Structures are given as C-alpha cells and as structure tokens.
Length: 188
Image 1 (cartoon, rainbow, N blue to C red):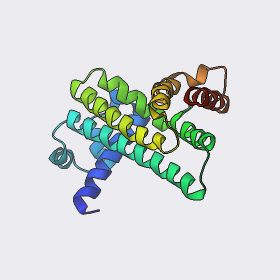
Image 2: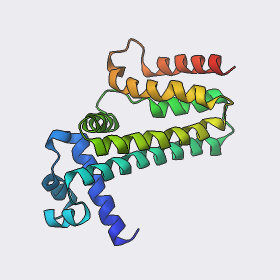
Image 3: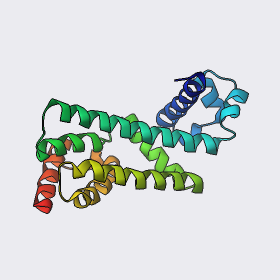
Image 4: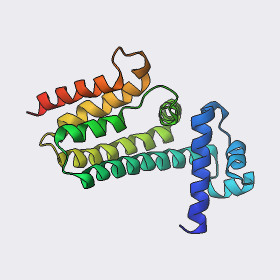
C-alpha cells in the first residue's frame, strides 16, 4: 500500500469506527479527522464533505465485509470438500448477525438509516447490493444448482435477522438449522 492508500484506509477506518461506536448523529468531519489523527483541512483534501466521506466509508465497509466472507469460505473449501450442509452452516453463521453489541450490526443499521435520508448514499447501497447479489450467486452456484432460490431467501432473511434477532424465540443455531432444512427442501 502506498502512502495515499494508507491515508485513505486510515480515514475510512476512523469513519467506520465513529459510525459504529457513536452513530450517525455524532459523525462529523472534525471528529473523523481527530480519530484519524489528521487536521480537518487534511481530511478535506481527501474528502470534500461529509457525504463524500460517508459514501467512500460505506463502499469500503461493504468491500471489507465481502472480503471477510470470501476468506472464511475459502478456508472452509481449503480444509475439505464441504457438503452443502456444512457450507450453508458456515455461510449462515457469517451472514446472520446477532443483535447483541455487534459493531457490524451497528454499522449496517447506521448505513440503512443514513441511506434513507441521503439519495447518493441510497444509490451507493443499491449498487453494493446489486453487486453483492451477483457475487453471492456465483458463490452459491459452486454448491447448488438453484443459487437464485437460496439467494432470494438468505439476503432478505439475513438483513431482517440482524434487526430482530434479539427478540426471536429461537437462538442463532436453531435458526441456522431451520434455514438449512428450508433451503434443502427448496433446492431438491
């Protein structure tokens, strides 16, 4: 990574930290600059305003989540040739974020809240999910002949689960078992 890339990474990580720890209401260019260890003018050199910073941070965050998921699933493939059940268990374990003090969860909730009030960010989130669905379809097609069925169930369920998991009567492990059964029945 060259110096510019390092600085951009530092700024984006600081933005994500502020968003996930304090929420969007407390996000400011000044606070991000402070957390990143930069002057405000130096931050503004890279990102002219809060909207540009938010869009870049959201894109960076989504890319890092996708990289993390890819890495975890590749480790699984490397260790053995997993069955569809094992693959689904790992995928669901990664996708289903629990509502109990999870920085990822907080970040997703902040992104959704912000995108409902910011058209540019809403478009960035839409582009991310379009790309994410294509990527996920390719991933799922490596172990299923009906990736569109699995994807159409998993993505909305995972998103909704992140919001209501703490009030569901079943724990995460039981939900994963249930979803695997549903997916296996749908894809037979």
